[in-house]
Length: 278
Image (cartoon, rainbow, N blue to C red; front, side, top):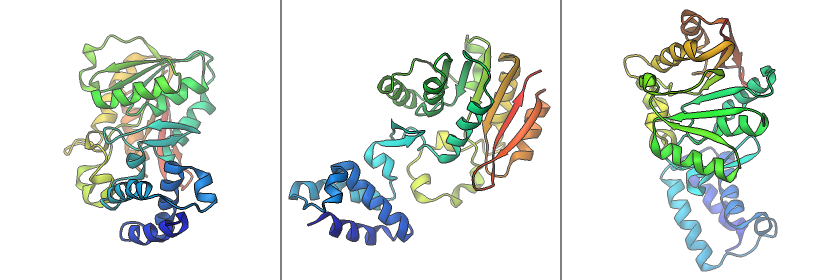
């Protein structure tokens, strides 16, 4: 079977889950990543062994497993990161958060803490783009930290990884920071059924959902920690649930931060909050 024929067939099968355009993009990217762009461009013919490999991958896709988990990798800020179902798949909104930090940073050697690092995308990208930075990355999940450490090794980023729980930060002996950044669990559990099955059934709930009685509890806890562990004029950055800027801004301001600002993503949705400690 030629590559073009398989793409057409897999696209049709994936339309039970995704819209037509996304189905075709997934089918093409699967083949491109497994066998290379040349294979696709020249419409080469699969061997029986290759078809068997593709069908194994296709069965996972048809069970709503995200393509990134099937491939074992995802892309963020021009770099390739290893991912598995212990970490969230990188989102474009998080790239916008990183861009905001780059625009605002005036320090050549900032000391940075990334809380809830997951696969390490924020911490590693900041270290690569601000070479003099000293970056710490915290996560409660050992499995997630294993993925982040692997990514840091592959991408040659010197990160200080910490296994810890921000709710018990008194047990952690960390320095003062110039920046604290977090993309914490923020999906309200009552909205669970609004998520696509490829998110709900496969991405880690530990990294997705806030507390059922207080979906903003991570923001409150991180603000309290950050206020005492940021240097004077240090900056706090959050990724937030879409269009929840007012709620998160009130939490940040109530914790004593000033110059609290909400930023919109490229789709015009409130997705980031930044503030300064003075």
